[in-house]
Image 1 (tube, one colour):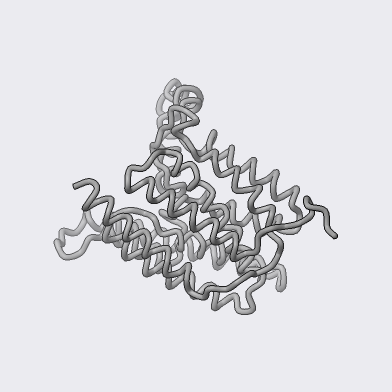
Image 2 (cartoon, helix red, strand yellow):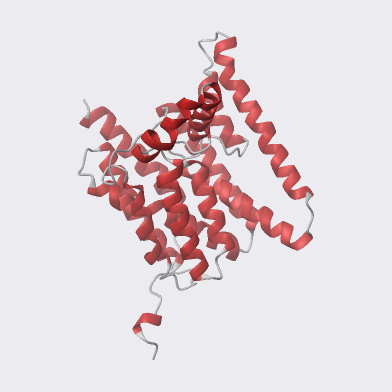
Length: 300
């Protein structure tokens, strides 16, 4: 009989169920005005979903089919984003992680550097195209076409671009790390903890940076101003956090992501019960319902 500490409790399906409950509580807290503890619990969802997505990439029999599902789901969700003018399309983040994992595995098989050259060029091209659409609102005047909406929500999804992802590039890095360190729990754990705290105290704006390092940039004159503006641009476009400033650990509850790790480490390597298509339908459906209730009923 295995010792209790050696037993792993959760299958991939079980982890997804935990993430779903966490996600619903988070979004209910956001749109229904529930206590902040709901948002705390919600920080567990994204890392668990990322871990499950990577495991799905590794163990699926048809990686291209897996990518297609995520891609089409991200396009559908981008339509809701465009309608509500918010960036909540986590399917795009999962697709971006899955695509990079797919490229990594293809590179391991073939050792062809052209895989990364093509991926990089496509990202650059699609990025410029989306920027061009954003500038379209300033150049062209057309009441029937919202170029900014197209460039922010629709075409980044259509083109598989890394711009304006929910959670930004940080979640992509976490997902790729889960893949890279998947066979070494110690490495996975240490790397994940470092990433979370680097995100909180480095990439996100907070009093330590805002009134410490960042504030000192002003003393550098024009060069400091350029660095400061670059920091804000990178935060807005690639980290999707912009100029968000947190004043206390209570308000910056992103540190709660660390507590997804003990749950992830209980993964037993099994797929578990299947519920085909459920998560693809549930995510947009629950978000639309909570958004409509919170925006048009609770706030009315």
